[in-house]
Length: 243
Length: 297
Image (cartoon, rainbow over all chains, first blue to last red; front, top):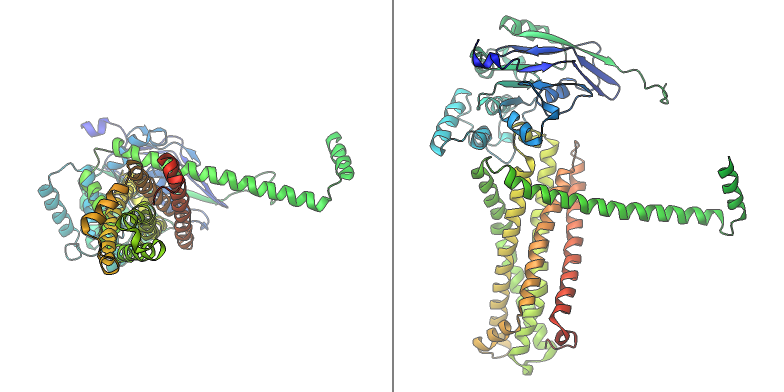
């Protein structure tokens, strides 16, 4: 057993999680994700009015508290940690936002370099070399000096993926599947994603807003696990006007 | 039931007409809500200031290079880019002060009076107020809208997801850089206003340079410098805090951004004027009876 495996599961939902928003709610059953395992969360139930993948991804990335349930990352209950400890935890976490969330006042190069310059503790030369390598690997070297609004959506998503993976995080959370529909996993971004996953030094969750049988089949063929989470309309609160 | 019946009896027996009583209650309610809202607003600003200072220490190991880069960028945006407008305003104000001084008290009263006018009016009041105005128009609005748009586009969430503090990444550098820029702009304003005023004075009345500048500097007391420092320091911190607070208060919708910008600019203007009034009064009373009795001139 390697040292990493001795540390236990990367993510554990001991008693599952429940999230309630407006007229809908969803529930993820208790589960644990070990190092090297990648899970796609797919909704089951009626199509919800609110996007379920957004809150689920944020809950798994320690950015949003669930209505009920415990989220443990590396055996730490993330919503009981002090803010400084949460920051440390997030430094080893890659969050790929569905719409990029790229800082609009920085160039693509600076955006990809930011986590490295803050947490990397590298010399300037080493940092620059690593960023240049990463930009090249993600086919961003031609757009490094441009700002997010100057490039198309697929490039923005690639930049977001590059930014999330540059510190080689153990736990990666993806909100949606980005440009998967465009290339069915044959493009640069998903190629890099596959390589990253193949190293077995990380785990991850991909949160989908609706069923996508084609993606699920592809993901399972890549060795990923598909987990369904139940979405449903909430019953009105007893005593409320509608009740 | 008892209380209702007592209340009804009281209402029936009351000499105040029911409608007016209702209006008074609503007014008291609104006034109370406004006062509480003001206290809450001030409390949030102070809390934000505390956090923005605290994170400098607690997150000291997180990317000092990037932090300094952000501070220098803010100095560039607020300070360097505002040099042109500030020089123009300072020349105009310096000239105006001299023309008003010569016209108001006459050239015959000499260089000393003109120097003191410039000291009291320009250095003490107009310079910090006008540079503050320039900063409100240029930077407060820009910061509020930038942070508001960042909130809407979830860029601040991205910063948090990277394990960074948005306060340290976005607010502290803006306050540091902004206050430093405001000090620099005030120095520039004062220098240009004095030099411009002196040059114009040469056309109107023949005053030797050493007499003019001696008059100016002899009119400056330590309490004036303290007052000016308070106006710039506290004013600068307040302006940038208000801008950041309203920018960060935007939640999800882009329609909230213009509201945040207008609130930030209006509140910072009110804050600036009130602060200047308070500090000027304080300086006046600290300076003693000589000024209160008109001893300035």
